[in-house]
Image 1: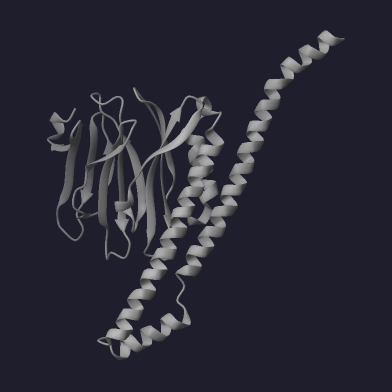
Image 2 (image 1 turned 90 degrees about the vertical axis):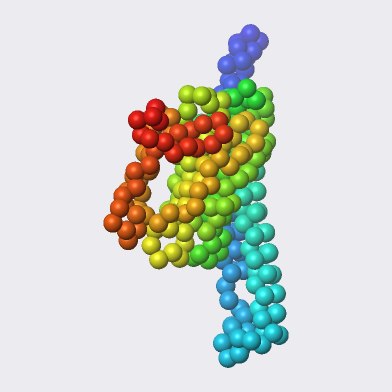
Length: 285
């Protein structure tokens, strides 16, 4: 009888641990989702005009050169911006807490597609882009990189981020953050670039359209993560146009019409260790 009890315990224990892990992950997901809903509501509230702000705006319209009104409006706007930025930072911290909490002890089983789905759920309506997740295997170890963007309280403000989490043994920690130069852009996307010469680096091409622009004002950026830190590899000037980005074996192509111009864009780019290079299509592969 004693032997049968031992055998049952040996077979039951892994199942019990798995169930505990899933339950813990569900609990963390619910907590993160609730926290982000609450913080998002506060961000919107902070950015709502107050009676005092409306009064100052009315005075400014009557006499825009009144230095006292200008000073008060500047101070009010600065306070609102600090409060809003602080709350947005807490949303990002809630994401970090969820990723680290749900991954610690389960590093081997990390699935980027599942992480992207979980991130979409916990961000909810505050997300303004489709979240994406990528895994990197490098000499420095494994890393999970997330891409997402959230509303920063108004129709014209947002916070875009790329966040790298280093996987050490069976533990996870935040290792790097970038992407804020894409704040204020919508219709965002992120694509993983490939290069035969850089197998141990994660290169991402990110793009979006400026909020409030009268037409497709497009910004593109390329970032690389080498297992330790992010680096901006390509930061061109914005270009007006409706473009399609197609990945190639060694980089990408950009094709499409320029905005309100009778010409087309057909550019091919090559991924190199020190950046991206515009090249002739037949010489890019």
